[in-house]
Length: 161
Image 1: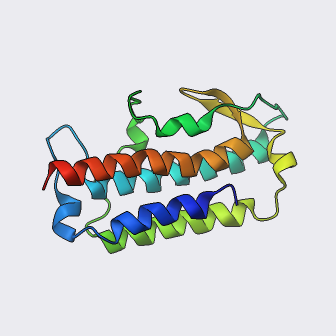
Image 2: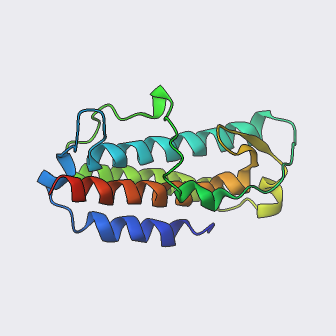
């Protein structure tokens, strides 16, 4: 659904090759460790799912034009995560982080499983870079966002070797 599982598999393929020591290393003080990136992914997916649910329950229908969300993987354009979506040290191991990500994915799939793409396309909310995106695009964006940060995690691992 929305390519989420295929994109998550790429993340797991990488994470399964990372040691606990590698996951906790930071290339510099102002960059995130792999564990912190995983926490950000957990926070972001949880935020998106909650926002999708809130919009469906409380907002008027407002469709939007399709956006080139696959461009989210282009890391040459820096985006500062809002404070609430920045890591705070929630996870102390890869397994904890994987468990958290599995739980947010379960919540995502539960929310989306009985909603048609057509219904999701009738509602939207704003993305800081892409502008208004419909809820179907937000669901798909979760996977593109993970691939963006997969590139970051690979870079962190390379820099800390």
